[in-house]
Image (tube, rainbow, N blue to C red):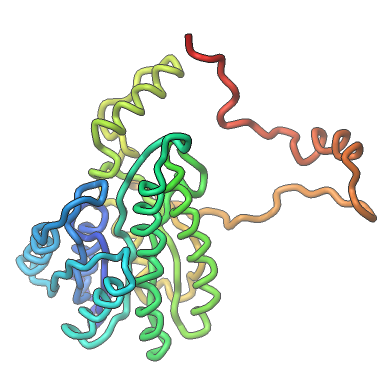
Length: 309
């Protein structure tokens, strides 16, 4: 047991397994009292059970830590309020919020239903807001706090078949940048983690089949092991706990990659190139200059393919 977070109270959503479990375990190992939230759904968000959250709480207690379970749904405003209230009712305050809960409903955009879109946006994007809002109110009053959100390369870079998930994760990155500016003056930092790890979200028959299909199109063999990014989900936790600690008090508004033993910081979006003239550009001018300037070197990530026979 460490003491970097001794006296701190943390909430981790989606902490019943995978990355969230590792985060909750390490937060507790460093002395934090932890609310382990998990609705206990399947990977697509259906069903519910208390077993995942209860199991992680039991693990934390067996290791000498303090934790309580919460089974509320982050996708609702009431659920978000109840999750944060659980920290207040059991431990008297909240110092750390890790927004991690998520589901997948992968589908190519031309086949995606409105329900599949809404379900993923609700859990990831609404869920992040629904927990951050009540936590921020309390953290602002105490003029301290750490919020760590969870984004994805699907949102920052893009991944085929994940329009709903990618849109939510890009939204979470934008939410992080804005909240960092809203809350930084009150001693609250807001950052996000961009993890790559093999969890039930990434290791499934459907995802494996998609990887095999992509590899076949490229004329290669898809790796059979560590298909979801190549690392243990527990490898993500140290960076999250570091961002939650006093050592990271001046780190605010950034996205950090975490894949196995490799950590990185993403450059926040900024113009890479620009063109300028006095007055409005004409289309004739753009026809001439854009290919030689703004579009020079740009690569189409999905060039047109001949129709399948």
